[in-house]
Length: 332
Ligand SMILES: Nc1ncnc2c1ncn2[C@@H]1O[C@H](COP(=O)(O)OP(=O)(O)O)[C@@H](O)[C@H]1O
Ligand SMILES: CC(C)(COP(=O)(O)O)[C@@H](O)C(=O)NCCC(=O)O
Image (cartoon, rainbow, N blue to C red; front, side, top):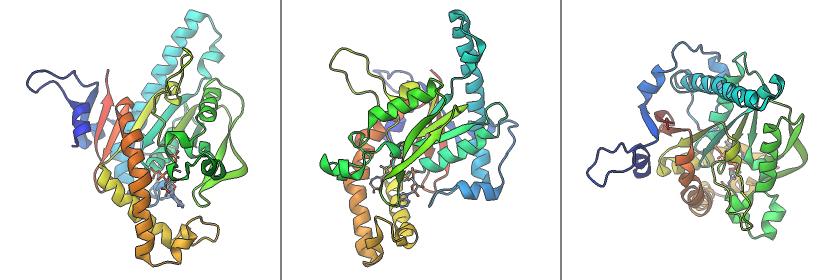
């Protein structure tokens, strides 16, 4: 367990001065897995295979042991949240229909290449199988990155993924509109292949039961206001949040092996931004990958992403083989 995680789990057992009690309960994989109870497995091995991102290990055992307990927990959370909204609705004397229409919003955070997308896609598939909330939409925050042209103008091309590389106001507006029950809300779309926002393409979300918002910085607190007004962040709209966690060195290995695989696959596409790396020796391409990790993704992880881990409702900690080893669930 790394130092920061130890800090999250401290239980006040060490000598004085005694640290404050952890808000998390720390569960081993076996302890967490037992909590799935009788939740049925609604996916086949083929469906799981289709949800798996490049380089991310995921099989039926992982779905059963890690994601079924999570699906059960989220279902309980969704029921409890509706009850709570019902209580507030009773207090405010609002009609029943308005109380149940607000979507339940889940944030999924973590480093580049940690496997957030796989976690988010899998959750989408599992949660949509519950009859109570069949409409589950997934939005990734990369759609809210500023277009490359604007990033270049602002000198931010080597800061892609840092908080300032996003149109944070548009992202906030999107989540706030979905949460407010707006009939139809649209988001811009990012292409990893072209490495830029796709012009004239929008993703449309129509009153989902659940919205999953996945991205590096979704747990970032709001920027401090200068005018005395309260600033909100997207995380203020989350009913539940998950931080996908792993050792930085493991994530670096995953990033680099994915880069190598992409060189043999997606980069070959004539429209790929990285096409030139298929035309140079492998070592030269890998040196570029190492440089991107060292100068962009790792600093962003350490400066911006990792410090938000302690804000998550649930931390899923992966081992070097991508399998979840521990789950830390916020209890306070
Ligand atoms: N250059 C690329 N070309 C094509 N696909 C990519 C490229 N870089 C990343 N991807 C894919 O985009 C998705 C999101 O990746 P990323 O933002 O690193 O988050 P994570 O790995 O945590 O889901 C992954 O499925 C990954 O395989
Ligand atoms: C697009 C990303 C910023 C991730 O965005 P997210 O969906 O987490 O908002 C990231 O995958 C990325 O491309 N980073 C830039 C450095 C790199 O090429 O890896």
